[in-house]
Image (cartoon, rainbow, N blue to C red; front, side, top):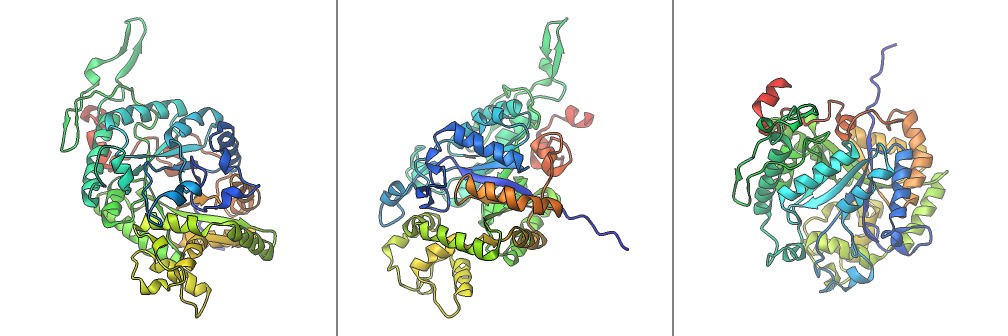
Length: 461
């Protein structure tokens, strides 16, 4: 009998936000969720220790730095329904969770708007040292006018210019992380009173369109030097940036068929940028409702739908689309409005409701129903295998209640996935990058950051 190739295991991240409500708005009102306790560190310690028991790879924290008046002409619904406001800093939270975990990766979000790359690079190196190499950075350019206004701009920087800015931002960081200190710069010569070799520590002499940074980097090299790099841009410029830089890209395809096209494009662009097609892990956002029977799972899903806020969902979508859906007639068919970016959601709704045209009202609940897998643990495992076959490398598990969504998945689905080889049963040794790629703690030589490594250091590798 021929040997079958063992299935590749999927990456699993707990996807959350340091806020009351992340994606499924209105559910914070339920008694079985701890979303309103987000200011309490104990809430997050409970979550990360649960994720670690469940052998998840990382806690992945989204973040925003502004709130636009994008729904019904204002921001009242965002405030009233806690649609991603109030929100606390994701990086501070991730750092606070280092001591509560031993193996779990800690991925935070930081925009090029919110911190100078010199200061940011030092903070990340500190984080990587203290966590023993478990840090990841979700790189964002921020699409909110209010975010730009909070940092001295009149309005959002034009799209393509933001990515030129992002290119220079990461280049400065790469120079500091990869090029400033050689691998053997720290000598630890106690007898000679010599901690480090000045000849092996370098200024970076960066001068570009956005930044002028002399250096050197003030932190000595951390376990990974550069954190594991994530990016989620869906535009042409965003995908190009990810192809050059990201080690993981977060997608929100509506079906496995949708994954195939996106994955092929991302991987082809990575190869065109001089990287390997598998240098980028494709991480799909999904949520799950688990039941011992399919009917029980469907019943739980219906109860969650009943508690979900339509206004909260439409406010979220309005912000993402840049179109105020609150000013439209709720029962007007969406296909009459020629709104870019919602065709896939409309198609998802109409496939589930044959003969019915999706309205603005339906759009919110259709959005909530996309990327949700409902069923028994075995059915969910079957579906995840289909998504994997289509091209995903992992899943950002989106909560509906917390920690309930994660707890149900870990208790019921994880054992089935582990039995099938689709989820890890224990943590491999090493850093987050070691565990995700199995090729050492450092970025590979074909990554653009590697060109900043000092030539003597590169020759010694």
